[in-house]
Length: 392
Image 1 (tube, rainbow, N blue to C red):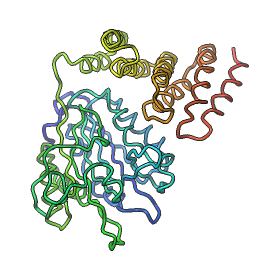
Image 2: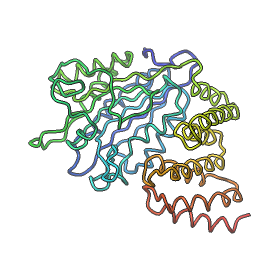
Image 3: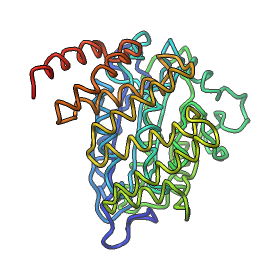
């Protein structure tokens, strides 16, 4: 039977499982990520999720970061518990030195355009209800990424590589891999391969997870994590940097919990009004361009998207992007790019040509300053604007 994951009660919403295995196709591949998928695919969906029923989405060596984002976004908005099994290789982009999950076409020089930025996990999971999201990770890095993440401790220190069978490190997570405070995270980051090793590594931790779940029983996440570390170590795999952090459970009075419950019950107007109140309070206390106020503006933009109001969502994202730029944030800062990308995405979903024409010039102006990661984004806006001029 499934373990204690929320959502296993009779009549609860089905769980959602996203299996993502990605690694470069060329000489830079450090791990054969896709080799774990047959093991996980043999596990019943309900066991993978820890719920009575579950829907499973599998992504094997995807090519485009936008394709991964689309699947992640759909999974994040699904009701019920969400479990993500992610196996792959982390690389840094050369401009901002931010970690990305390398995809099939990724090379060290193309990380920014062909890999999946890790902070997109945090961005997409932020409206998930507390206690409803779990990330199970088996990640591999090169020496440069390992050091930049701040996990190059000497042997014996918390989180450093230890001998097989060594106890797990205390719960911690490199700041650059933050996936949101409400997301539970378990797994490991394998230590960089030695210079003499030329073979591609195996996702030993995730294969151990799959082997344990094939028994048909899912223990609680912490117990599954512990057993997987022991099993992988028994087969000679060094644990590397151990990831173990509980997500926050539902907190009475937590505004995000209340807003999520309103959305799930279809009370979109109530959810938006509550977020607007928190935004106003944050603006009065910290300033309208403060991170506290902008956070709630971003929540309102997401809520408008969930309610199907693409025009309002686009309008809010445009305002957030402009505010961030006006406070001196760089055009290639992840928070700025995310705001403009989301405004662009929502603009493309506006069904009213008049409203789209009204918002188009502001989007084009921002796109000229924030081109983003996809080539031709500004040209796309201009072409769409030209087409809109002929529509009623």
